[in-house]
Length: 376
Picture (cartoon, rainbow, N blue to C red):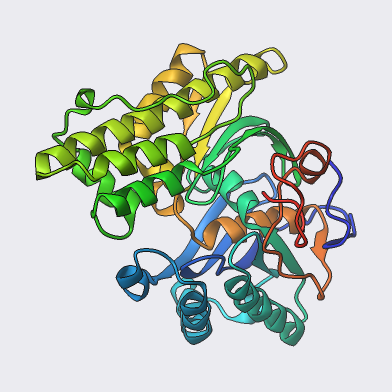
């Protein structure tokens, strides 16, 4: 795919002979995060520090993320979080080779905070800036815990995104399937809210599902007749939210939570299975990577790992600390970009929408392109 011309000025100098040390910043939603990652010329990544300030308490009363509250918290916390990340790494700004910051997609008020801080560091210290796609960070996050070679098949499944991608390298990814309505993580969160399980909803629903008997509830299965790799969770979300109103006891809620968790895991496995069949026709190297916040769900991991084994794919998920939003994945994506000479202009914009496979999003949009651009 073509590299994002409006965000990146290509300067493909020779690869550096020494390691690259990059500061990463992540502020796309409700975590203020900073990390320092060192990348060797042969692709081995070491996380020197990773600091995440969560805003869960700030948003708990509202049952979800409030964009204005999130942006204000990022402004208040970003300086201290970066100071701690640098101190934990035992480094000063003079030891950095570059700075990477999430430039989208996400809540644009928050994205602007981290990206603006990254630009300030780059300007003040004369460092290259890498404006990183948040989804690209998730795509490479498995490389933080293991030596992972390109290409691989990726299921990126989080609160805002649910996609199957062929990952051939940094800035070189093709969309195989995506959600046509809600993401899996969004379904987890909103069903949990309807059940009164608290915030954040995904982990709360997973806890409630322990000891539940999901066979009590018959939930809809979406897109069974379609031969593509797309997802749909809106019907499940609506049906489960209605059933939640009939739950009178904790056991009722536990049974429904188990049914929801199993239904989401089943659909993820069904569509991933189809993608594996297509992918296996093109590649001998068969590795299935699951990344994003929902990858932290143990049931989802178990079902997807079994699916991969059935198709002869290796299975890999990032360490739990790097499944949810973090800056280490942004630093790694930035370091890989810097290694290739893909440095961003200082006027790189904050983008609320930014699909990884922009060419596919424009040629075959799942959602109409809006004023801010194609959806992820």
